[in-house]
Image (cartoon, rainbow, N blue to C red; front, side, top):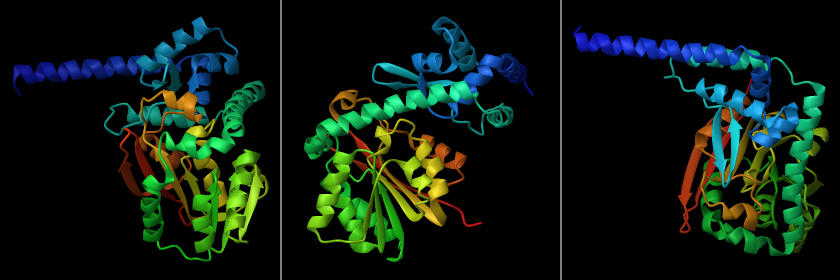
Length: 332
């Protein structure tokens, strides 16, 4: 081995040792462990974390910097707002095994009851923001949706994907957030039983009218969200989110709840925007999130014990890209 190679190896060892030092320092603090437990549930802005954990912003910024330097926290920009989250762990990271074990140990410790109550309040406020948008704009839904992606631009690709899955017509299908009901009609024509779930009553009534106009009688309408579906034990074989995930206060919950609602061998189908930087969509279209990275959704699926399947990507003329991703619930 040459002297240059030896120096390079020595430098790498020093870098690894320094990274390990930062990691151990970051984990050696109770408050930082609380922050990491919280970031497992969703991405949060600084002020949201301050509210949930009841800490001052200056103190939080100090701890977030330490976590970021240790590779235990990362940021996601949503327009002018920065959200913190836990990073995706990559197997080529020399400290991958230690970080993974640390997260697993941290996640076994539940948040305190007061923290859970404040977390629920933040999520309710996000949900109310989205709900108010759809309540105000129910009569303009097609116009608002058309600013980003009209159904006609990707419907044929979505129907092709459903055909490729070769699903039995005897299945029970749930569409979360069915909009005005165009896809709901297609599903009701193909499958034995369909559930339409929406927390915006005005939107649910629009979907109900669309289905009634087609004289279809195999659709059950539920006013609420997946928490409501869980309470009603609304088990199904396929759950479909069509351009809905970016409106949810905690999008990774969709994967966790799907794992509970799906029958063994069931499928979760997500039609969603890829991550983008067109911030105007937040105000004009009521979006809480500017799309998602595919790796991010795969990570959420893995946490919910769902397995990735087929994926289809479709570019639109206005710079947006749509991803259609299938996830499987294993048969035990």
